[in-house]
Length: 400
Image (cartoon, rainbow, N blue to C red; front, side, top):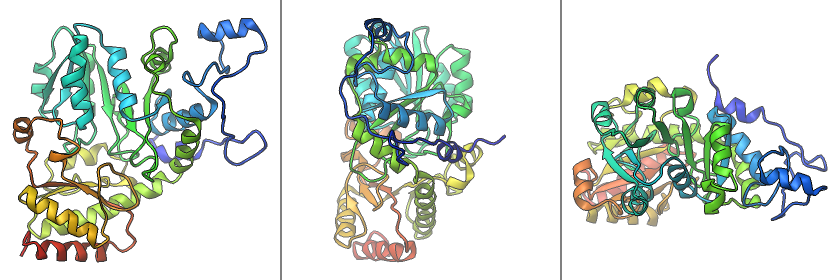
C-alpha cells in the first residue's frame, strides 16, 4: 500500500485533559512520582509512560514527536530546540574519537561548519563528496566510517540525493544513512527509501510561520532511546530541549503542512518555468532541465510536488543584492535567511547561509556569487508575483 504521510498525521487524534480538541500543554519542568521505586525505574529507563524531567521529555514534546514519526514512517522521534540541536547529537551519538563521516559537499552551512571545524576537536573527521556521484561516495568510505550524511534536496544547490542507492551503499559497509529532509517534507519520505535516521529543522516548512526554531530526529525506538539515555545520550546530555509551549504550537501548524506544501510547490513550479523561459539560469527539481528531475520524480509523493525552493543566478553578487533589495521594496518578499514562510524569502547563500564554506570550495561545487536562493511563499496570485519580479529584473538589466 502506498505510503501517505499526510494521512498518518491526520489519523492521530489527541484529547486535552479537559476534553479539548488540542492536547493540553504540560507547563512543568519536573514531574512527581507516587513512589520512590518508580523514580528509580524511570532513571534506569524501565518505566514507560512516566515523565522524569523536561530535559528528558514532556507530554507535549512526545505528542509532536509521535506526529513527526508518523509523517516520516519511523518508529518514533525526539524533538529538539533547533535543527542543529537535532543534527549534532545524532553525529556525536553515532561517532566517537577516531571515527569518520562521509558527507555531501552541499549541505546547510551550520552542518558543514560542525563537521569541518568542530567535530575534529573530538577527532571525528569528514570527507565531503559529490553526493550525486555514487562511485565517489563509496570510494570515500574507510574502515572507520560510521555515517553517510546527506540532504534529500541539498542546501542551497538543490542537488537531489538518490536515497535508495545510498542506503544500499550504507548497508553494504555497515554505516548509518542520516538524511536531512528539511527542504522536502511530505514530498520525500527518506525512511521509506532506506534512510536510518531522518532529520528536520522544524523552523522551516513544518512550522511554517517563522516564529520559532526547532528540530527533530526520526528513527528507531532503540536509537531514540539511546539519544535520551540519562547516562550517555547525546540529546539528554547536550541539553537541546524543546519548550513544551513551542512543541504545542508546531503541532498545530503541522496539521496544515500538506495544504501549504502543495501551494509552495505549485507556486515554485510556476515561477521556475517562467524564470527559465526568460533565459535565467534556474535550478528547480521540477524542471526537466534539472539533472536529477527523473530521480526526484521517482522518489516523490506526487501530490506534494517538487518543493518550494528554487535558485536563479543574477550574474553577480552586486546584481543579486540589488534585485533582492528591489523585490523587498516592492513587497514581493523579504531579504532574509531561512525558508518555509508564507511570504517569499530570498538570500544570496554564498554570503549568508553557506558563508561557512570557503570560497574556493564554493566555486568548486558551483555556488556562484550571483546565486539567489528563493523560498517561494503562498502567494494567491502567483502570476502577478511573476510579472512584478520580471519588472524588477528588467529594471536592473538582469534580463532584457
